[in-house]
Image (cartoon, rainbow, N blue to C red; front, side):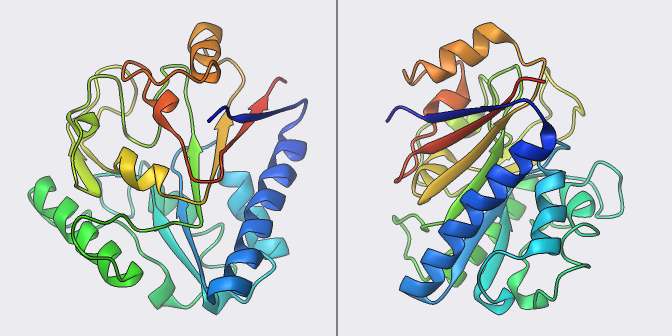
Length: 239
């Protein structure tokens, strides 16, 4: 499915567009199914969105919204490189979200393969899906980089190998920083989401961006594999 592309001249405009996309999906999901399930992204690009969520809400009661993570670096929560640690002070401590609705990846579980299994079991429990089925996220937030990755799915990652796993353990990448082992949702989970809200920051490699936006799936550019149920919304900052 060809992604829907929107370009913005400012971070503020892109953040508001992302908030509108997520809020509309959340309110619709709660009206139709009684709850909304969102996978948050790491990195610095989506942080303004999380602050805006806390300020403006998502058009649905907080107790009906569950938050998961698309990926996580295997460091303690207090580490400055932790995705959960970056999100929590902007969203979880500022909005009245029930603690049971917040689902961080289990960075304290070893080895990483066991941590991936633990989070997969949590996903299946919350979503109520059996082995062999994928949970249906309402929205999957996915910032991209000039390397064409999504979540912690990098070119050549073992987590890209077709599998029925929901969560993969990823060795430290060699092409991006920080070079830390990670957990990541897999392509089937990302593509089972109702919507994808994706960012491309300024300075992204134009060649990678053009190849991904061409709409042809290519494992060498994991971001090109995104095909959520209702389409991918690409938000590109041209500033």
